[in-house]
Image 1 (cartoon, one colour):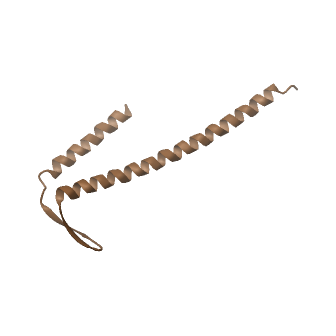
Image 2 (cartoon, rainbow, N blue to C red):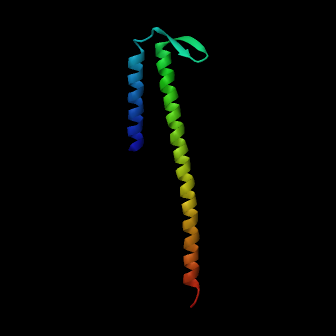
Length: 93
């Protein structure tokens, strides 16, 4: 369900981007530290959206990988504690 909502949101953002960039095909000057570049506004908006999505996905992947690593460590500790607990129960007193 969450994936469906995420895809609907992504498609909505993409549709809004297409709607806003289609009539804005005029050239604009992009000034940066090393110089300037004349580029279509539609292309500039598309590149900005793509770069923002790429950065967001990268941070999300880093977060997911860290959670998976922590989960594996916790599962390992749980298995160790479980085997110690079973060993204590098996030992006659």
